[in-house]
Amino acid sequence: MCGITGYYAYKEKHSTNIAKISQSNLKHSLRGPDSGNIYNDFNIALGHRRLSIIDTSSVANQPMSDASGRYVLVFNGEIFNYRQLSEQYLGDTWRRIGGPKTSSDTEVLLYLLAEYGTGALEWLSGFFAFAFYDKETGKLILARDRYGKKPLNYYMGNGFVAFASEMKALLEYGIPKEIDYTVANQYFQLNYIPQPQSILKGVAKLKPAHYLVFSPNGLEEYAPFYTLATHPERYSQYTYEEAKKLLIDKMDASVQERMIADVPLGAFLSGGIDSSVIVALASRYTSQLNTFSIGYKDNKFFDETKYAQLVAKKYKTNHTVFSLSNNDFLEHLYQVLDYIDEPFADSSALPVYILSMHTRRHVTVALSGDGGDEVFAGYNKHAAEWKIRQESMANKMVKAGMPLWNALPRSRNNKFTNLFRQLHRFAEGAELPVKDRYWRWASFINEKEASRIFRKGIAEEIDMAMLEQEKQYFLRHIKSDDFNEILLTDMNLVLAGDMLVKVDLMSMANSLEVRSPFLDHKVVDFAFGLPAAYKIDGKLKKRIVQDAFRPMLPAEIYNRPKHGFEIPLLDWFKNELWELIDNDLLKKEFVEEQGIFNVTATEGLKQKLLSNNPEDTHATIWALIVFQYWWKKYFA
Image 1 (cartoon, one colour):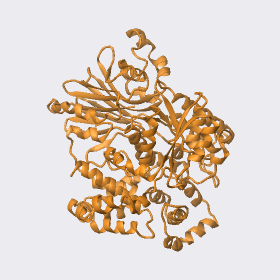
Image 2 (tube, helix red, strand yellow):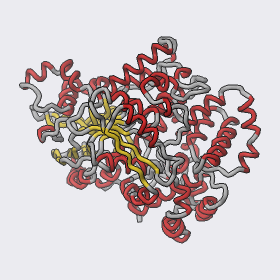
Image 3 (cartoon, one colour):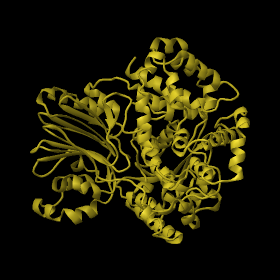
Image 4 (cartoon, one colour):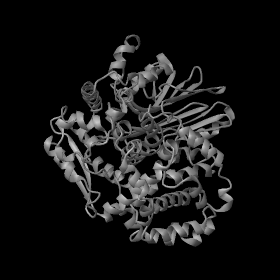
């Protein structure tokens, strides 16, 4: 993995900004600590920071040019099938130029693009964001992998395009910094910014599975090279037993493919089904796999390390547990806030950061179970959605209990208050149409509540019609009673905007590459050709994953509550972080002077946080803290 940046002035008068490539490239130093280089021409500059994984020699450094010097590539990611693609498509090329000069996937990608252009994109197995420049035609191609694992931000100005892996690098080109408050409203609803939008007007993320083509005439093409879709026509193709066997084969191939590396490799092991499956399969291909878990020393409700240790023992992995206290987490809070260059308030970014930091001391590449929940229906909200679709007495009783759930304390912080919170959300969602229910369960607050956080003048800038239009865009796949449409929506909204952003940011902040076998496109396409009943029923989430791999995993990790990678924010806010909230980032006088938020709303949130019924207030407070810290860094 690496960081890429670039500036292409297709009108020569803008080429003076090319000099800023050096500062931009430096901002990616943590993404690529091993080397940093720049390609310059009179109207284009491409920068690359390298984290060496495959062919760690200097000849594989980037920007990389072909033998003729016509083509230049900067590439972030891994192409796992590069050897097969080399044999299948580049035999004549290698004979013509005397063979490849490296053993890297970068060189293979360079020549595939030179020979086949964007037509080669559909052949790639892996994750990537890259820029490819043809000096002869003056064409620039930007592309991003199928599910958005690797980021690519860009800004199109008058006669130029600037792009970078991270916003902090893009801002070095002096692009305008104007907050889009309509997007900010979505941020406070979801606690992340849904893609392809950004917090700044004019800045966008390249959509997953898309490419852009620029020429001296400007933008020529913006198109997909792959479409993620449900495949109802395949639902009856395999029996459940056949599908289980095929899933094992496809996951095994995906894991094996992702173990290609010329540096030390390990795996995250949370104790959940997904990471346990990855470890079980990876152990087939190495005598002693390095595995890593994070534990919660001060909060056993969130700690799952005992389950991880059962898997590690079964597969005789070289297992390391990082058992952390609240102080350990708090110690790294500001490092996380400092690295985030656009508001992003998934609080589990903090444990992911710490896990990545500790893991990086042992290995350079880690396998993870990311994507398993979205692809195979593993979230509690999936179980709730399934239950709502069944006519049952239990549903009626939960809905009838709404007055009670309203009266009981609700929070995520312990078993009982979390149960009351879930019952309340279930009863609330049960009364809504499926699209509205999905959005409600994806959100912490609704658009009107989010608007009330802003002061009047700012709130008036929020385009409510655009918010509704964007929401319907994200919900466009929910058309029938096919449960796979819910999972498809999760892939495009939650996975792309939240989960993959979190892992990329926090792993790259520690110069660690994370690979996700569940997101091999062959696995994903197979999964979306399976009927929903194979994935979820009244007893099991991720049914086919659990059943297919049951013989390989300890029985104890089955049928237990799913906690996720959470941290006890509510306790921290009431204690260790109260000073940060009340006397700094949400201090009444500061909020008034800043002029963005409604002081009555922020003070009300602080009061609710300290009440006996905080609900999800801590999530909104955290979103405000992240926003305020970001605003101070870039605007104060």
